[in-house]
View 1 (cartoon, rainbow, N blue to C red):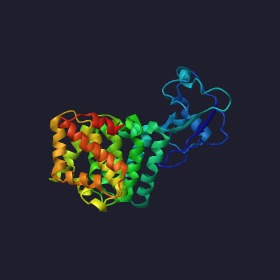
View 2: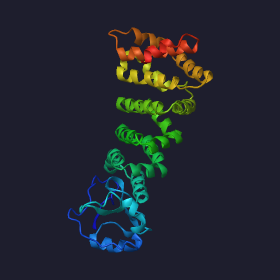
View 3: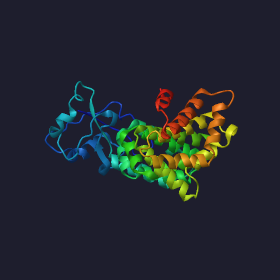
View 4: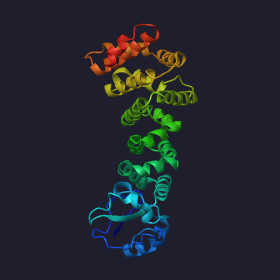
Length: 329
């Protein structure tokens, strides 16, 4: 069959096409493990990889092949990919090696090199969902939080973009759910003086809250940790912004109240519900709510979300829940 390689020795390279364009032919012995034939394939291709880093590829190119097995033992994996004359077996770096190289480069780079790596991260996750699984299972999220805690706003934006892509995958979202320090970092960024960082972190918190109801409690856990560590009332980062009134862009106001509503709607018990709403009221939420409900000219989306908030409070105090249902339609 034809053989090619993918030059992914640089984990942040944007090259994603197999080489060479005109693949050479290689005769695999179907009853010999692939690992025993690897050096011959490497020689034919003159591939840039180190042999101990070689592996079969799936990704967008097809199924991963187990190097310790023969092709005969994996013929079911190849079904549907060997039709016609243009299929080939592609060699590339093992996932775990690629991920470790990626994390190592992120942790040990600075300046333009770190900037380039962080900028490329979103595209890397978008191109290879299998890398996401390995990344989150090899402390990749802790790596991003560590860099994000020390970086300027531009780097933080790149990390948030990558995190947003990562959270589109089940493996990525599940990893965020099990690592509360990521949610803590997102909430801490709401206090940033850079609006793009604030908006993006709020959007990701909303996505996280709406993914499953139990995530609201994880957000509350993160908020509790961050604010109590700083000896602040709960949700102080967000309330500080709402209390700026006209100095706060409407989009940010909408994101904050939407996040409040998403969290409140999923809280399973009254004590936790009132812990949150009491903290908000202590920081002027009633005044804030009335301000945005009556502000001229009216902004429909903002009014709708503040109306949902007030209806939720009335319902919890024993009023008819039909108002909430109608507002949320």
